[in-house]
Image (cartoon, rainbow, N blue to C red; front, side, top):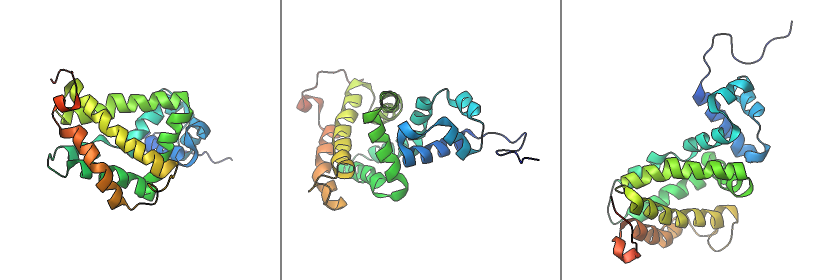
Length: 205
């Protein structure tokens, strides 16, 4: 008699278990090479259950990003508005790239978004509907707050691309403290200076 793999009959399927499996597989293999079957095997569920829970690989990729970069990681820092705000945000973001358990996921997330159209759409959805919404709400809400979040993000993502993905010196060889010292003030400026100094003509709700 062949022993059946997977969960015992009646054992509940954990959505979180599928998300954790997806996070692991996307980190190891990237979006293109990760299949729903591989994720299902990792989570010990039937592939049809993965589709039932998330609808598509792209939707699962988008949801798994929330495990990699939870919004409260940044909003907690943004809630403390002081002179160290920009540096704290940069240090928190760089910390994700410096830690082995999250660095691979961060790299996969960015690289997949730049090489696959479905992953790109999923990444944009993650940013627009989840991350920027949470961050802009902490900054006061409205289009001005959302734009501030995006301007700060250009510094963060650009730094990560050059330092961790492309590994371009001297940025890739600087210590974390040095990068924080250099990039932090730019992020702080976008997050805090008056709208008129940024040349913005947007309603601040």
